[in-house]
Image 1 (cartoon, one colour):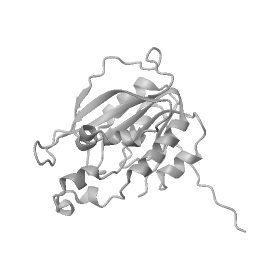
Image 2: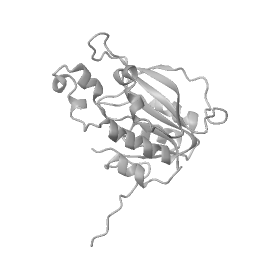
Image 3: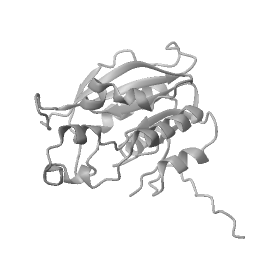
Length: 219
């Protein structure tokens, strides 16, 4: 019988693998922060323009994740986070307004949503009423909840206006903003995890702040 080959987890590097497999290979309470930008499609389905291949070609071609898959990611993220460490969860306007992101959260567990950021992308997107130009980030802390000694920078504004280099990836995020969050809740050398790394902006932010990146994407 052939033995199962365990994936080789590399640090501070791009790697192609399933993010859930990566999380399951990580040790319990090893991460000081996790970023999750899941590729869900509730917003596209709700808008139902019928032309996403023309207007959202990069996004439409990416592998899609359903609620059960994203919830499985968050269960593993809860395990790998250290006590009082943070999950930074990206959501779009539809997920925020419909509160559909709450379906991803474990019913029982020490994860507490406690803050949010709005990223003004400075570009107009889709919408049947208002045209979207923002994404939101839900800030979630693993228990015990505390700010003193954990959240180091209390001058961060909750609205960030910045452009991102979308030629790198359809879901690219502004690297200076990612770096400011990493430096706010971690120390040099700490492990920061991104299991849906996309354009690897978190990797670049970790390199700039001397943190240890562990992440991957399917492509």
